[in-house]
Length: 134
Image (cartoon, rainbow, N blue to C red; front, side):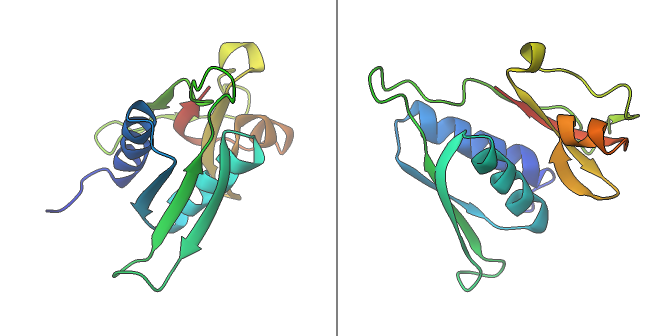
């Protein structure tokens, strides 16, 4: 089965694993997914991650999901895909969306790599809005 949108699949796997209360989720690897995983980690949305490039054809990303220790509610409340293969969403550096007044992050794929909306704004580069997380 060929995946038409691997990034949407990545986000859905994280969403589903959280709803099922899993500790770890395994996702087929790609450069873009690795970058998104690093951004999620740097912004405190996941506990830890591991890239296993030897597993399978393209390697596997193992992500340890983060939950609130008291309420057991997932830290990631919403993951949304913005730019899809059928409808790409590009923005200039001045149009990068603020997610819930700065509480969430927009992940933007720019000419200088994948970064958060804040970083892209600071570097004054626009790009493709991949997804948002809060």
